[in-house]
Length: 259
Length: 223
Image (tube, rainbow over all chains, first blue to last red):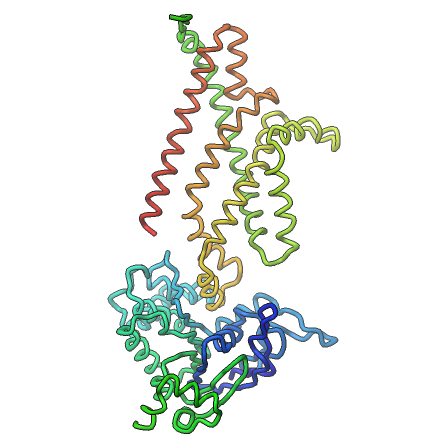
């Protein structure tokens, strides 16, 4: 569904993605882990073309994201309308939530469907209300984001992403900015989505969640894929020494063995 | 002690119609140049916020050129030099409106640019991630948030613009200052008339500045 091949990305002299090749299947819960600065968030942002990759290709259901090959083999930037259309099919949930502060929770959720997908407002509002109910925010429909807790804001942001009826949702460290006691409510919502068969690509430090909910886990380090394995074996029997080291530092191997 | 001047403000009252007429022209100049300044300023501000150099550079050159030359020189150039170069002569009122409009556009552009730049990158990311195009993103997400922060500097710029309209007197536009000077020539009462003029401007402009300060405090408290 999401095919990434030969992906490279530089920030100035900093080579942050050094040839990523991976294919994410429909309905898969794909978890990306790794130390900070390993390029995992950049990879996620590249999938939605919030960062523009320098080489390689990202394809959503076979359609290349952001760049097209002109006759003669030169890479040219795709039309803005094509980029926007593809982006709307791959929604994103951010570490800092990024709700629109001048709009209510409901307005945040209906914004994309009404403005981008041109749904009738009545229908969009009905669907949005149902989604907000699903993430446990039916009593916050008319609240402004600034009045919500971090966990509530993130759940509203998940509803906003779902409202686009996307093929996949990208989660960029969705619980990293939350107070510890609010992490659980967001992970519970995400777990529910995973069980419903939504395609999810998740960058996270929540190893317990990765092991319990993830189908495959990919470990990145220094812009490269270090290990890619089914979640169970990734945690039970990591093969790459860097993965072993990473997991040991998170002290999760032990609890994984015990489970 | 010292000289005592006998004020004769009845002169001003006698000729009040002249002040009203001048104030009308001042309002007209302010409104005309404000309209030009806002529209052109928004365009320039968006250009300066663009990623493309082909958009950014011309806008930057415009803004810096107009900020680095005296507005009086700009007005005189537009009124006297432009017709000679192009054969296109605007009337004095239109000249001043256009001249001040072009001038204030440079400042409005900076207000728009700074307002847009002050919006968190996450807002742009979120708007893009739900598939918004540039126009939708600006209209629905970025500008509504930016405009609230721009209101105080905006109002200050309007007050500045209103004061600049007095430069119209140089091009023989019958705005407040020019009317006042004519009146002085007829009545020989410069002290009364200039004092009235200053008070008149204060009475018009101070409430605007006061409003801007109140609004600034209000918006700060809410964010």
